[in-house]
Image (cartoon, rainbow, N blue to C red):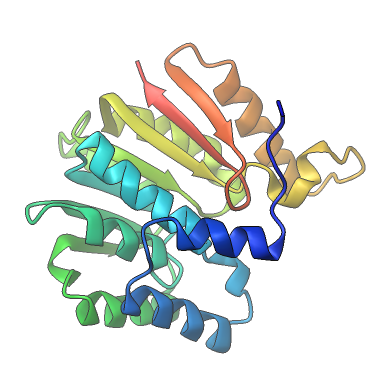
Length: 220
């Protein structure tokens, strides 16, 4: 057919059924996020969580770095796929949302794998660099304030090993990246990071239409 197929509700359900299934904890966390937060769309979709779990296994990930935890779905999905000695450094600033995240990490038995660091992510990432952790992470996921994406990406390129991957979320931004009338700061920032990564000869890059769009950048 030559083009990426659009997903109807029934086709999306079919896709999810034929992917790594959500655990009970992932399903419950998604439901509580939908019920108790005003912005449940900030949570990644189930098929994206399944994709990340498969990527963790395929890449042999042991050290994972996350910028933007929200209620903890993506960190939980990754933690479930990590080996017993796998570790996550998760960065966020919101105590309320991450309290929900911690509760589900405990329920799923993976809290011991996750080092949650509350504070501005740029400072947390710089502290990791200063502590000599350059080139020690296998996978990074960026899903936080869009205006800081460029900074997170540059810090991530230092922290991820050669052959490691940075995943950047929301790169299609609900389709607004191609709406030239949308001049919001967040939209402009997404366009800028998309252009920057596409032209970056330090990485191999593919933008895929899963969820709200995810860019995969593999460090050369």
